[in-house]
Image (cartoon, rainbow, N blue to C red; front, side, top):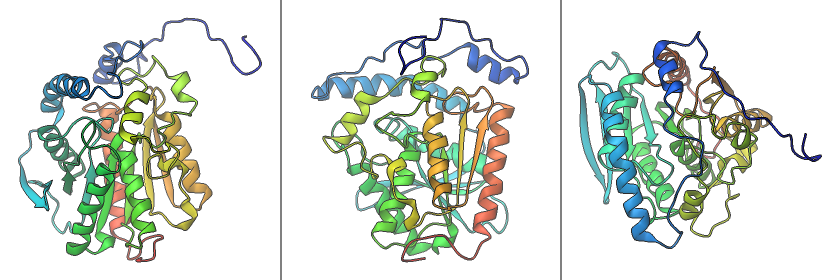
Length: 332
């Protein structure tokens, strides 16, 4: 049993549920993370971090090239005072679509810039059948906090010059979910108009990693390890509980747009997502939560289970973009 504050769990094998789709079963049966401690460079070893990033991104490139849809899309590279933004329009964009999704890419707040950012933007635009802006935001070790959030704000301000806020939805998965929520909090605090909605997919909403699933799902999530060394590198000495670093601890009573959140029962960030949903609902913010059975971090991309979540998000987009008002913010 352990002491009064812990519960000892015996080692055991976790079966892959037979009712999942074949693709989902394959994902669970072939984890990319073995449950052991992740090896990261020392905090002050910048060249070590650069080498680590190059190696990790080289491993991610083939996967993203495979799972990013091959459907044709127009990609324009916009330059916002030195910030590259990938403006993606899918070929099958539904007639009458007038909204835009500001996508903040995932990657643990230190990976997936450049070509990886472009591929991920194409994937989001194609799966959600929407126009996407995705800023190639700066990251550590050379550009720690608040560089990424500053770049997200630059992109959001540029979108507000072209679109009514009721036509803008902010999206982020994983680290992008952190930035998406932090962006909305900061935009609200600076008096900018709120977007029509927020899509937070398994968001890295708590850089303190205090949630229950960081213990329960450690080694269970097939693709994600704790990221505390990266969190500290990104924060660059700032308090991890600052809402612009860990949006979970923000004050949502001051306003936040309607939100959809997605996660899975094996997701290391399950607690992040569930607690973020409860924090929003406690402030009476419209928010819906979708938890995918047996899914780890990132859901079952390319599987029917992942397609179901994409469908829910498309429904959410249609709903919030059809509204005439948005929730919260002085500029609403």
